[in-house]
Amino acid sequence: SGISGTFGQTNYSCSKSGIIGYVSSMGHHHQQQQQNNGHNYGMNAIAPGFIETDMTNKIPWLTQNLGRHMNSLLQGGQPIDIAEAILFLSSEASLGINGNTLRVCGQHLVGA
Image (cartoon, rainbow, N blue to C red; front, side, top):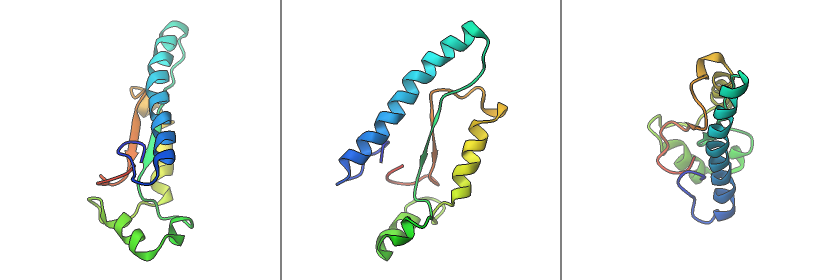
């Protein structure tokens, strides 16, 4: 939604894209500050695709199946997928990533 927009959800798409822009801008700002004060952290965002949750289970059946099958995995994501992305971005393995939005969407064709 924040990356590619969603018809009929302009307000939702705008708020997500605002976060993406903020993270991109501030991530680079924080990187410059880190070089000056010796701290090492990043500022990133996660853009999930269709995730199987109690909320998405309430979506009409046809819409659910479209959400599940519009990516290369042909299935919805699981909450653990988002949790693992957060763990990765919180780890030392991601220290070189800053000001980016990590898409966790199975190469979703629309949205995220």
